[in-house]
Length: 512
Image 1 (cartoon, helix red, strand yellow):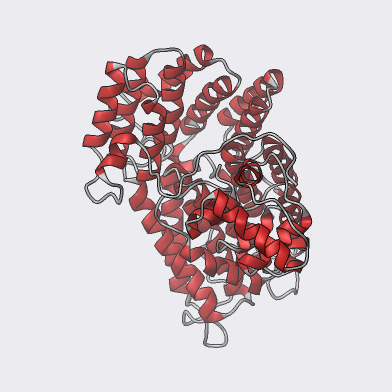
Image 2 (cartoon, rainbow, N blue to C red):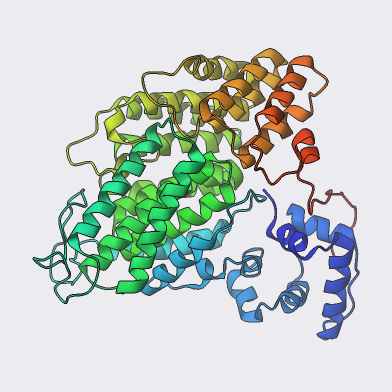
């Protein structure tokens, strides 16, 4: 994952040497004394090997226009995100008004592929999440007006807070009919999470359009009252769909931001079950590109917050736990979590399970088959993470073989990213022909690999480009790339986007 400092440097067009000189000069101008201006220092900051001295951080913050109190409050490296446009997600209080501002800011996330970097990790992540979940559970037993037990109906079909003629009691706010249609469209989008024949990018566009509509309605009609609670609930659900599809497109940075706004919206809606699903999906983001310890903490939190987790949610949590433990090298613990995931995948959803409760790896109408395939893929990925590609290969073959012809059920939007792991496994054991087959399956299933995911495929294959099968697979990716891609022909052929890239060089000696 790209360090936020590397993203800032790239945005400003600064080399490590240039950035080091700016920080050293600012450090002296602020009266903190002289410091060495070495590019190796910047490399170590960006690699996570060292943390800048407090005065160096203050010099950096001064250069970027970040107030010193924010540096102390957020800590390294989280205050850097205030520089790259994530200030609203970090700064806003966990209130309905704060959630509305955070949701509005997330409408402007970058659409083009960008280097992956998580916004919140470690103690900062724990603090934000704890605050959100306290808000979600504190208000969960009250009606939106605070008068008594709230409606726990799992379906958004009744006109809560609306008058007899389809408007709110006060003549303002979205109509009952409008809310019912939003609910119907949101449920339809959620069903595509389990399986779809539609292009993932097109689905993301539809989900983001629905999410944008809901957020704008919140801005237009206020943050309080029954209708606002329902809108926040829809905002959380549509944000979760956007996060799920962003991850399927290989855009983990965008996926995490959508996940964080979903947590905020679920808190504003006082929906602990929905907050648990958002937390479970956030845990998956940290398995992919963050710290597995953070992922395990999120898994534990999701289990304690939700009141009625569905089989789909439990399957997702156990799979995430297994992958995090595998990343930490705990083979036995990973195996136990996978066994529990298998049992959860075979369970029948209980009466009254909410649509979103069944989500992270599929919704109830598709049955248990998607959940079982998810466990198969998790077994393969765990083996790969544990350094046992020969054990992973048979599980990935099950996935690849299942896609030989259009199956009875539509494939998961995440099939492209799952097959990327299959390519890793086949390359690791030297089975280049099977790796090429997995590449072809990925393109055939998705129609066209999205740019972010296609780049990852090329990166994996390029190291083995001398192998005939791999070379043909790279040519196939080039030939099937969309003409409207913003990448140049040379970038497509080399599998790189070198804009702003800087090699990380090791250096000896202390940071300061």
